[in-house]
Image 1: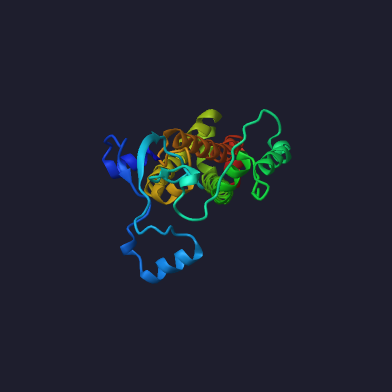
Image 2: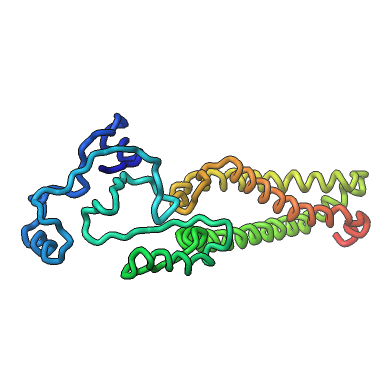
Length: 267
């Protein structure tokens, strides 16, 4: 008897009822070279029968991801350990506990030794450790990308600040005349902010278009988040806009504090 997962049913049975179906997890022997079959028999990893083992499907279970959490489910067949048809097999024991998991390692070893003294026990890990190991490489990649993204945002803010400071310096005479003619300082700040944000809006729009085009590249590095998640894009726009606003506001505020007479006299 065997149990299959939903992906197996979808892929090989078209979503139809799989209960009672006869399946085999090994291909027919005639597809293998005779030398390979003889070598497998001498090694004891191949049954003596000429026909591969066949199993009757008795149940269907949910899909499970093995080894990684960012892949797609594979069609799987589960058979009892005693009916394993692929030679050497491994058995995994899952222990649930309310206390420290590794504190039960020694009692578990003792219980296994009481059942089979020759049975080796190895690779004892908590589930959190296994999950952390499975996402270690993607986490490192995302950490590096996040560091470069932060540096890029800082450089962008510094660039905007430098451009606005230069623009304010070039327009000191104009600003001085505006202030001398009665323009309020907050109006000067608002004028410079509007002009600065016009450039920022164009940059953000171009950046969003480029990000949408590059989503396929980042798809393999994400888990639990869509490459076009609106919340993520909204957060990025807000962060970049706030950084640009600060980088634009500081030179604008400095320009509004200029003394008109001093500015015009210097010109």
